[in-house]
Image (tube, rainbow, N blue to C red; front, side, top):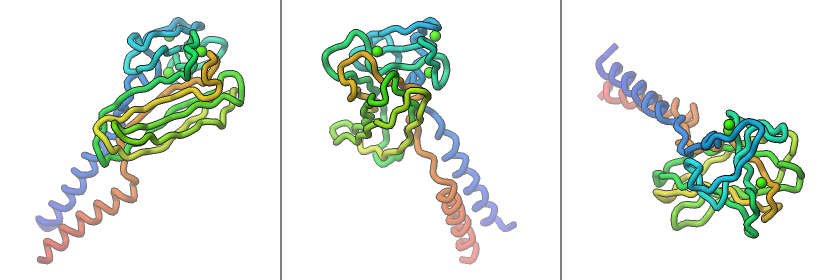
Length: 207
Ligand SMILES: [Ca+2]
Ligand SMILES: [Ca+2]
Ligand SMILES: [Ca+2]
């Protein structure tokens, strides 16, 4: 194997490792709503200041209450908190993002009591327009998983859930396992990138 071939193979390996290593870190703090701890069989509504990571007027967390079990871990949130505020309920988190970087996002959701329950999920770059999704396909007998991606256009991005139906009642939608991660390039993209580097090494060898 020539020196240039070795350099090309080493470059390919190091690029693959560099891309793969940080990809799984969740940028959402407490996305599984395990903090603060609620006793099993109970629910509790907290001021946002008592809930790590999250903001909003009030945040309601359940642990195996009413035979409802978490999608991940022991606990999950109910979007419509208690007591009612007379306005729509929102919970959100602001995360640091790199402009131009693609991010994958996902969360588990379930309607509590009625198939008419729905909520909005939005991603809003600081100073920019919101991207919004309406989650209105609910079933009450199990968790569904939403996943999509976005490209950041600001150094701060707000991830938010807002009650829609019912907007102000205290019965609403369950949420768990909220994740935002740096998007992993498709295997095909990586392979092409690697081939390109190999090609570069071969071209240099010929020259
Ligand atoms: Ca959880
Ligand atoms: Ca608990
Ligand atoms: Ca509630």
